[in-house]
Every structure is written in C-alpha cells, then in structure tokens.
Image (cartoon, rainbow, N blue to C red; front, side, top):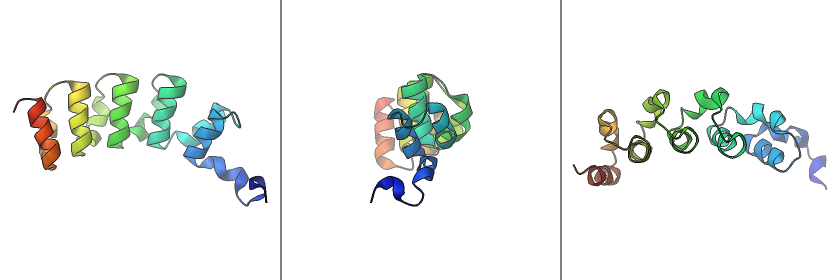
Length: 131
C-alpha cells in the first residue's frame, strides 16, 4: 500500500511538524503551511528562525506561552529582551536562568523565586552572578 492511499493522508499537513517538513521539502508552499505551524510554539519558532529569518508577530502569542521556545525566540530571533514573554519564561527555572544569562545578561530578581525551585539551576545562577 502507498502512503497516499491511507485514510487521512491528505489531512496530514494539519500536523505542524508535517506541515513544516512538507513545505521545506516543496510538497506545499510555506503560505499553505503557515496556518498549521503558527499555533505550535516549536514549529512557529523554527519557521521564524529558519525561513522568515525575522520576527513572526502572528505567532508570538503562541510562542511566548512556552518557556523553552520563548527563550529561543527571544535569544535567536529577536536577539533581545522580550518583556511580553517574561511572565511565562520566569515560571520555568531552567529557561528563566538561560534567559537571564543569555538574553538579559544580568540578574533577574523577579524570576529568582522560580529559579530557586530547582537546586541545580539555582546553583548555576548563583555562580554566574556571583551570589
């Protein structure tokens, strides 16, 4: 049996990862893939980084809610602080620490209570900022 004969084959691009890869491989256009990848933080970030090579404002409200992808988006796409995402980033000890060290380049007192929740991450934070 060929994959294209399977039930749901034509709807497979509704899955963000499949839409991204289908566009990357030329099966569909990036414009066709956008509605499926825009709401997925990982694939929206990768699209902004690798395809658009700039901000993707339409996806930011989705990306910001995932601390990991918000960190990467701020660090590698925006290349600056992203205040709107900070309430989400700060709640994850590891990504709050990475954001502090790599994006803010200074202590982030508002996030410290969250960073403290992970002893290993807190130890790294204290070492980086000589606390």
